[in-house]
Image (tube, rainbow, N blue to C red; front, side, top):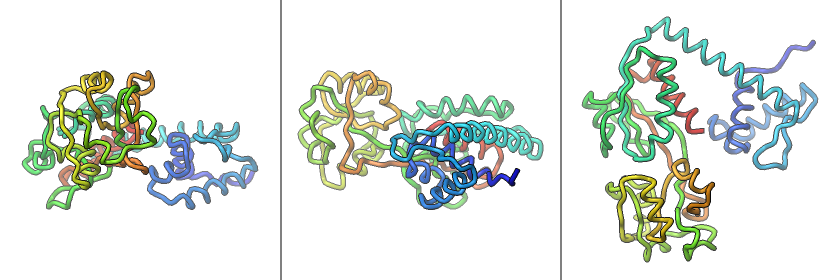
Length: 299
């Protein structure tokens, strides 16, 4: 039998294709170009003599041969991550402290599962949430009151602070299925001028829709606040206004038809979350593993 061309990067590509559904999303997740991924796929297909997935389906549909390699990829990558984690724990010790500060109300939807998984692998690391919502989470890290801060957008460089991109997401306009904008393909900033924006009780610069979509065009809609996501959605569903929320926070309600969504702008409003931590902790094995768990949980 000829030598297998399979490398870890090929396995990571297969998993990213399956999870992302498209070549573009897979490339974005792996921080490589689409042409680089295409080259990897052609290499594997040439070696095995089979197509790995059907080209004209969205999301990508793997063939029988592709599914077999995908199953192998998931098994090998899980085993590799487990082995590397255990080795890191032997080398560096298993103890530490990780206090997490967040500035968004909806972050708990993906953060709590990631924290639960992290605790299973690092039971002796003291993991905790800094109570409350904070507008200056990085300041808490600088002051030694937090070890990891979740922030919107890439923060400017600060002495002693390391940052890392966690994941990208889309903020969607959310409205009642009976709203007058229901036939629009997407909303423009001026569509909000005569609407009530229903949001969390935070400053304007904490809201993606205001900071990146409305404020640059000088649009200042009326505001109504609610503490909980479900309360915001109830007001939206009853026709009291429009909300703008991250896709992960509204997915179950969209599936049930309780509310509907529209892109913000023709290309959608793409946003980012980043993590900030002391440089002294950035390369600690438990910190690297925590970041990986967050990134995996958001996919």
